[in-house]
Length: 478
Image (cartoon, rainbow, N blue to C red):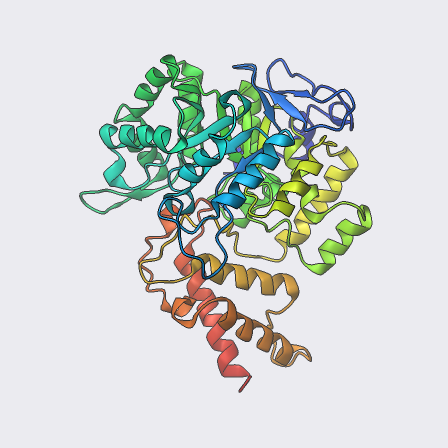
């Protein structure tokens, strides 16, 4: 892991080619012949677009992640076709996105309880096909889907659900994730699972054939987990066996240097980005807000950000950082609410790249956030459903929220202990039903292999459970 980390001194090599290349208002990023060029409107007011060097596609720097779709009001009857998701609102938000220059829509067969592709297809079908790009994934996580035949069925079903004849950007999904042997139930490394899901079964070769037939325009992969899988796929690219047109990675100003320090199974974003940049492979960015964590910082950190720029939202700092590096094709955001969409459109219309001074300031902010030791959960829901009914993301969200707000009391002698204890315990019962709380985890470990952040979920749940029990015993009645 030490060999894979890039020092801060080398940062300028990779962040937009140096300070001269990231001056706000620059028309083109340096070295664009190898990466993604920037195309802004003449008056500087429209969405910043990046050019895919493989196809010439002009892709919006803001990509719409269809992973956290708006749901129907509580008590509404679910639609048989779209489940609990508010198709009318999805249509409105897609219409707004397209009208304001957003043209990249990222979905998956497993998002939103399996409804995301269908909801996305319904919304986009109402518009000319040449006005948008569809990205979806081969999400064959479960080992009964690892056969070529079952994976082919998944691809064909994606075309059906999305109501299209071709996919603009097709990804091998979460290529570093681990799993279990279907016969022995032995735990498998992310490298071995990557080979079985995509290579040994001939699936990657079949997808290349579909690309040659025009059913896929760009072929790439997203990566989480086992770094050896990332290296393997890039080595195959270098050897000429496969040509990856793009790669999706997690990148934000906290993960840039701290991903490995937060969780030693992860790799710092600067390392992932550098490997793509030196090969000229466009990068698609996920988790620019780290599951909302960089939009919901504690009050002291928020005050520092506001003091630096009173007009800027907390989230906009993270989006500007993610959009600045040369070779970034698009930055995905799961925008559940219209106000999130409107704000993100504003941030990228046009992008004002992060300056060297702002970059150093954000690294300072990252150090402060890292010092809080939150559980690095992004609420992606990959760990759900828990077979024992736990609300895993909800538990972590409450714990992290209390950390940010200073409501995780450590000393019974503290003057604020009673108030903090009550806030933690009462809030816990309100946000997570008792039967779904951490003390019901039996340590089956089924969730761990599905976690893109490689969180040791049972260990974290047991730690939180023990903390809750300590608070209950120490302070008497609430």
